[in-house]
Image (cartoon, rainbow, N blue to C red):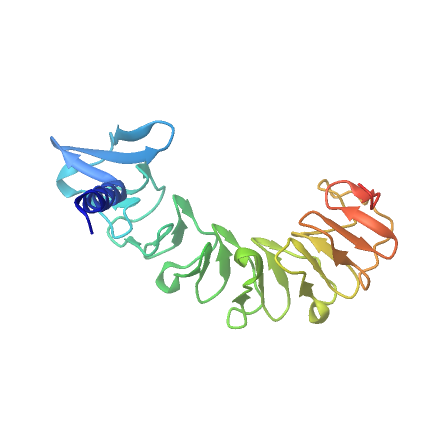
Length: 240
């Protein structure tokens, strides 16, 4: 490796290490340091933080002192600093609850709360997406589908798109249609968490969709034996 390449690598490592450190204690004050492409490095004083007891946790967006727990420099309401621990980039827990970022995770129970994968977490009673409970019928049967970046999941009774339960009437025939937001069962076609024959406001705007013949055209359009369907506009010409 030549000297220039070595220097670039060293600077990159230094930048990475510096950018990972989110909290800084100096002059008996605590600061939250962040970076974004628009404004570069930013340092914000955390007025409520107690410098003498403040510690940065394993996942450094989290920190705590004797009085509060913080996520990205913001106090997490009702989090217990004595028992709180960071268990993932976006996840933490205390003796009572799990947390996603600075939000309490639904009805989660801290003692059994753990990270599953991505935005999913679980305890002994339910599964959660971000801070929302899925209200699964079976924790033990729950699994995250690999299609489409893990947006889909299922248990023995239902399918989910992110935090929303799909109104599927025949789970046994449910299938995800490739790496797209489309899915179908023997009766209905779905786009993300809604039936494709209903618009975003819950109004029925396509009279009939034939699930058996439905195929994906692209990320937002499909077609059945009656013609083409746009996921946001309803029936369209297949020539569009």
